[in-house]
Image 1 (cartoon, one colour):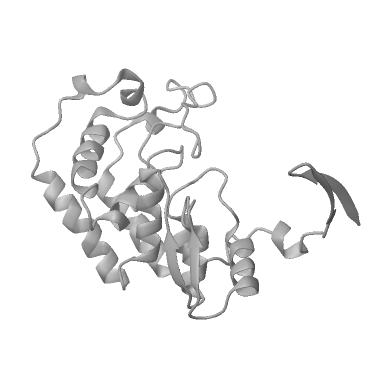
Image 2 (tube, rainbow, N blue to C red):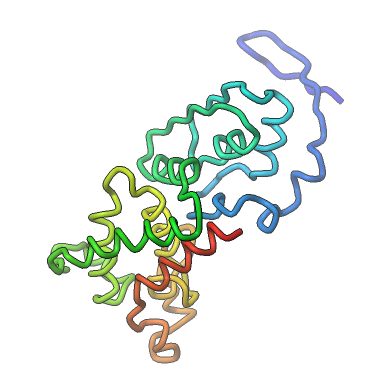
Length: 223
């Protein structure tokens, strides 16, 4: 089936092909766990990215993604033995892409990377939360926020992309393994109406960073 469209002033018939059924299926339990480092709105499914890499390149080819986003295409290309060049204007995208393409080589190395940043962060002075915007303070227990701020101060340094990505991945959610008060995972907003403090006081208690961060790094390198 073809559909007429106008391209640069001239009409062309574009062949419409139904997407493979595989593209409609979830890949959450079959993809490389590094894809799940941290949420990214609008990212391409890893199964789609992998199939496109297989179809339009071969081992040793250079795959270029100038809008790399969460690094899905670069990671799938790297897994398949392609050389990779990725770029993105977003600092968040750069952190995720570097973390996925250059992760620690083992579980032990992943835990050591996280612990190293934690130890350096714990040596920093306690931050003054009065300098933090009120809307940010509204998401976290004060003690948790202090730990998060000092950790981010160290983790944003070059070479710490994997611990930083693990940290960003556990910032917001209502589940116990995350750092914030109950909130949305993708677009952070407080879910205090669904989970009022008076009914769910434990969800507004202090949440320690160290154990949650190490658990995230361990899970991501174990799968």
